[in-house]
Amino acid sequence: MSRSETSAGPRRGRPGYDRPTLVRECVDMFNRHGYEATSMGMLATHLGISKSAIYHHVESKEAILGEALDAALDALEAAFDRVEALSDGPVERVEAAVRATLQALADHMPEVTLLLRLRGNSEVELRAMERRRTITRRFGALLEAGQADGAVRDDVDPRNLARLALGMINSVVDWFRPDGPHTVEEMVRSVTGVVLAGVRG
Amino acid sequence: MSRSETSAGPRRGRPGYDRPTLVRECVDMFNRHGYEATSMGMLATHLGISKSAIYHHVESKEAILGEALDAALDALEAAFDRVEALSDGPVERVEAAVRATLQALADHMPEVTLLLRLRGNSEVELRAMERRRTITRRFGALLEAGQADGAVRDDVDPRNLARLALGMINSVVDWFRPDGPHTVEEMVRSVTGVVLAGVRG
Image (cartoon, rainbow over all chains, first blue to last red; front, side, top):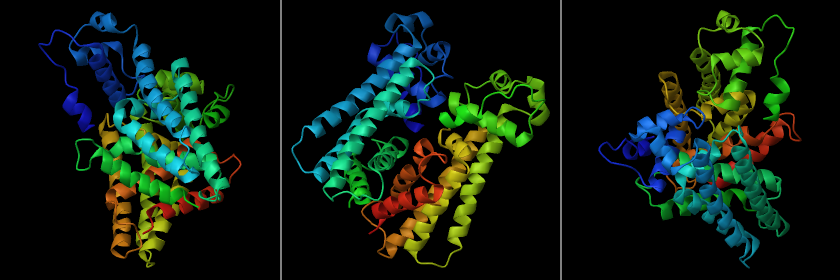
């Protein structure tokens, strides 16, 4: 909340926005009010520009949503691509996946926040939710390899263990503030420590 | 999603709803579409009754929200009241808090889901979020007592450790289904095991 409020006020007297700034401001509004409850009129009022000035940059509200979700999902998928290419042991790969996911969250906090709150009310949302489920499955596969190796606890099925670990990891978007008392590196280190302790065999 | 779809279709031919059923159906709609995006007209259409028939039971959409949030928060607060009254050691109290929170979530899944998605857009939401923060602080205090005792890891501050553990615990509303392959008891046992392993010193 404080993040949006300090960075997202209308900038009166400014002639316009570049596209990335405009998209970021819209994402902040979606996170504050909910995507469906945010109209193009509300975005225009918030930005202090006309609706047609918004349409100059983006074709629709859904296009902004799609672009933000792509940014979040591309970063998360790239993280798993890198981790799966590692030749390390199973626990090291699980640890690398946790770290890389946390880093992607920190790099794309507003977009990931939007992703985590989707309800599946449109094709764009359903596609994003399917990509998110695929990422959970990829994390589950890393945990399953760790279970086969005896390095990851095997009293919980790997898919549910992935969901639990990701629940802990994703909570970061609700409480971590990059301008707060802890650096991103410190947050990544502590959260990785807690997640790893939870899933180890 | 499947939960809502199996239980929440309009019941045509039925003259009316009792109040608890009506509130539950409305909460399902809020969770599906978002509270702000759900109008009284949508609720009436979904229920297959008139808006005035809804107003016969409840004074406003916000009254339904408030009632649902109270149910979730009352259950969570009662869980912490019981745990804090225990004379057990710090780790046992942390474990009891995790179990009791998971049980409250399982007992009030739709209402807790609604609580977890609030954005603070009204007095009712802000009050509920403040009650939720107080619960997080109470969990943090139990963890802090465990740290003083050497039983809980002390490399993460207790408030953040509480947020991480609650992130894992709360993820249950997104994936646990009481009619799925695992019973509530099994879910409570496995999730408690993973959370405890994560926070132990």
